[in-house]
Image 1 (cartoon, rainbow, N blue to C red):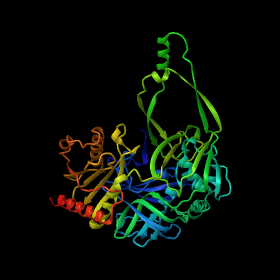
Image 2 (cartoon, helix red, strand yellow; image 1 turned 180 degrees about the vertical axis):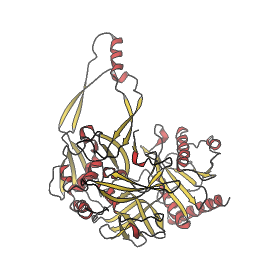
Image 3 (cartoon, rainbow, N blue to C red; image 1 turned 180 degrees about the horizontal axis):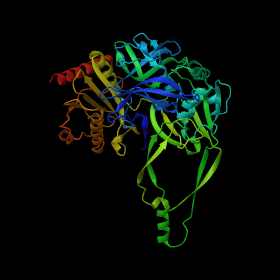
Image 4 (cartoon, helix red, strand yellow; image 1 turned 30 degrees about the horizontal axis):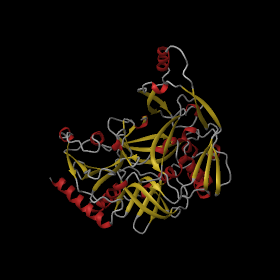
Length: 543
């Protein structure tokens, strides 16, 4: 699996988090960058970093980086749902208007970045405009770089008038990196380019943000939008840190056909085995065997831009769930067919071992003096929260728990298990773990690990009680060891870890904490689970 290292986030020995995306910085040449306020997770020291705007698709509040690499756990936030009646009805405020008990800037100026405040029957929701823009529009580096350039979107496809079509033909140009293309991306782009309200909203970003230090928009009128997010709660107020999914968008067509100048269909032609010395043929096969690499992409500062798209690198970073009102037929239209000759002996060769390879890349726009290739991001995954499965009850329980215990700091993260074993999958989908870090006052952290239990109903919740204050790296390392051990033992907690972890923490199984399991538990069940967990946590804290 490839990884991305952001050099600007390597600011010391300790992990850092993206505490706040403070807005835009415009350079003398007119190009834009993003100002990010970074905070040391362990000592709360702040750093200001200027990042290429092309990184926006993968930047969210509360992410944690160690030595420039994104970690699996978030530093803060509950996973929650709220219903917004109309996304276009809001009040725009600045970050200085955020209630202090909802989010703190530790005595520093909050800045001028914009937020949209929505009022529902049960809650008040604050959504940073930069996060809403990221979720709705920025699905790769190319779209992010086009955001603040007028008419740049029209260079990525052959434009037609927006509006609904029964059958839509979307023709991408060579300016759109072919490595970005997928059926899901094509649907997202079609909505952005052909839905009238979506296109107005995209255009409003440049019109309302040009020359300003903040990024804002006029959001499209998405009706009865079910918002799932990671956020912070204080009373009935929510601050959205990361949007996970949002309903209310309508497809601009019933059938979508998309094309690209480089979209070729490959036809494999089987080659007959040549006569000759068998030993010589085997040597040639091994000699011609291609190497496999596991890439480490290191992001440079982008001062000279990126090289042409011909040298484009691609990295899959799943950061959002895409959702539309209905499923439609999506087809690729290939330009021509490319014949590839298959070597009949290649299948008999042993698989090539993966070698690690470091590649310096850039998320900036293309530049004449550029020395490194561009990096492109694939951030979309199918629109479904089905991966959570019966963890839905645990998610809702933790939200209720935060209401009963408002002084507790809670961070929830959804983690994929290590692949390669049958237990790693659940109904042909990756099995996930819900990791909850609970911190109370000055007490050491308590960690809860719950697993999606399809096919393994007897698996218990695991609790880690750390004996002293530890670093964020230490917490993540223990969690990774426990989850990897669970996979290696095919869904059984590793008892030997009880001994190895004794120095830093105590492990305890909670076999009946959230039973019976239910994907849609009643409010009465949620209250029962939350009170049971509260009693357990309070008992641990008092001892």
